[in-house]
Length: 154
Image (cartoon, rainbow, N blue to C red):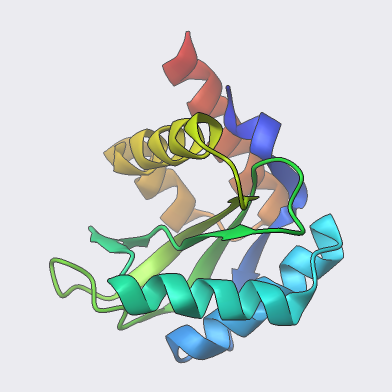
């Protein structure tokens, strides 16, 4: 599995207006509806429910919100780079500016875990994160993510 299997180019954005987790989740819901025809309200609700179990800010300015939804047929993702880092209750208490959201079918087992591990590995790579932070063009961000994933898989 590679990131290009779960991330579409239109699912990569630079966001300037998100000032809270809830606002960010609404932005992700809108983007999920545009890219994957998922109902935005269901996406927001699922992300909020998952976040209530524990923050998905994993440190180093990175958050990996994820949720299972009955409307999802295969694992899919969205990536946003925030122009202004926000508090995300991350484990290291640092603000978040790189967000990779994953959505999986409600009954997904190992595929969801494989996708989460792939995203986590990719986002732990310091050089990948530096490149993501240095670029604001969504097409470039998509290329950085998918090339990084392909290199790690090789």
